[in-house]
Picture 1 (spheres, rainbow, N blue to C red):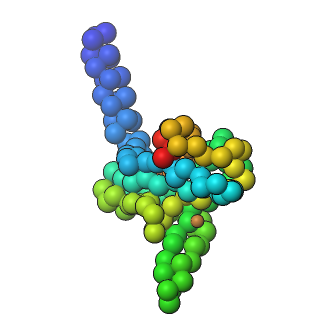
Picture 2: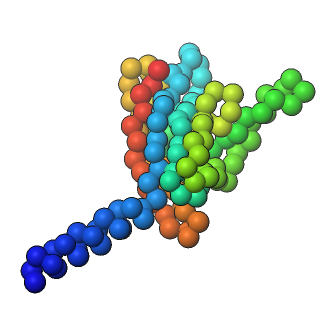
Amino acid sequence: MKNTFRIIVCLLFLAEANARAEVMVSDAWVRANAPGQSVGAAYMTLKSAQESQLFHVDSPAAGSVEIHSMSMTNGIMKMRSLETLPLQAGKAEKLAPGGFHLMLFDLKKPLKAGEKATFTLCFKDKMGKITQQDVILPIK
Ligand SMILES: [Cu+2]
């Protein structure tokens, strides 16, 4: 009886773990500041097993972090602040130079190559469940 109970608890735990909105974060990095630069940018690839969205980002390295898109219109680079970055199930969304990026404002100190910066990523799945993930990014 005791053993059966233990197995059931284990299965419940596994089911819960699988249901969690895990988002894989890869190729994550922060661009080192050029002299005199007061803002920063961070890049990463996000892949969620289920439909989700990145809706908030925080970092102790910056006063505020915004999710930005970048596009070329008539030869002019335009950045736009996004409320959320939608993630399709199983599809990798790339934040990379020239496209989506995290914009760091009000830097606490210059972003120096070789150092690291921590970010807290907040995701919301389609059921409205919020999960939070901390990632440590190299500055380069
Ligand atoms: Cu930007």
